Length: 539
Image (cartoon, rainbow, N blue to C red; front, side, top):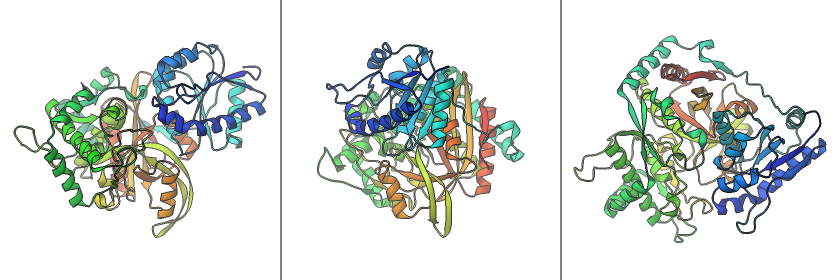
């Protein structure tokens, strides 16, 4: 681009009008700052769609409407996707796949609404689709790094970020015995084969979260495509007494429930019992179809029938959980084991979670693992337990699927709070807690260039003062479980430039040395399963 162009801007959003309406103000404030930065560079901004009175917001909220919007955008024009909220990538993927002009995805560095999460999901979807794009992020769109990147994009159509923290596995020195252990384990895993239960694939628009069958089959994992209507129908067969027994089990363990009286605004005992019926139904269906891991789609479809699935998801990911018995034989199902669950039917997390769960048992480590949203973060300086800490501390946050085994004080440190009504009209509680300090291995499976790829690194979960934790909850979603993480050898912008997902998988290791051993074993396993493996940061 030889001259500063006219830039078209779009804002993709949620499928739910209530969420879009709640987030409209923050989105428009972000766009105003972004528009000012572009104007100061001599550019002109045209917003490709406006406020619609019928829905009460100005977001793109469906694939149908997205196609209407793209018909009015010149195919060669510079295009910005500005995100301050969670968005459904399929609303705009069609237009971005066929767009010929330069594309820039932009997010505000804020935890208020998950715009960073939305942008990472869109970026990963574009990566999988083979679409060329650039990305930028900023707190207020006035910092030198953002303005330099914006200037480069306006003039050349490209922004480049340094990712020197990423190295192919072949270039990294790791314990050879652990690499070999992982490879041996993976050969057995692939030979045994496993079934991944998928409830309504792709319903949240997460193109990046769907693994093409032929790529997944090479790992020894095969999909069983299930319907959430089947899950709901199975819930209806669960007896009230079974749900009540599960609830009593949780109360004896010390788990708390923030119950109120209003079905519209509070978590109620009735909602919790329905969630426990879903938990029991999910375990029975996994047994019926032989699933080693399952993923519930969690938002669309089920939200119009029953409370949210988060309580079920968190319990499924925990080995110590209310026992579930076969409907006829009364045999306990998956006794003493978790049933690894991948939130939002993210199949990349499903493959990662299943491999982690089984491999960690081989290593003798606690195998509970979960995905989190890579939600937000900020610099911290102050007390961390008994030591002084100065580091960039990320907020890992997920809607409730984290296992109580990850929390300080386990079940006694776990509370279930009502999901925000803007997302879940029928309510339902989360599995909320503060993740315990310790060392983790983080990772991500993703699709790029028609191949399965895998990034892995080490992180430290740190303890923060209660007021700092509460402030971070306040600035994101206070009903959801939180993990305070320092990523080793990776700064904020490196992580954002590389990470190909809204989700990040985490599992604990007993010590830092054990985390390196686990990283090596998992890297060796994934390489043996056919994935291109890169190690990120220091280990």
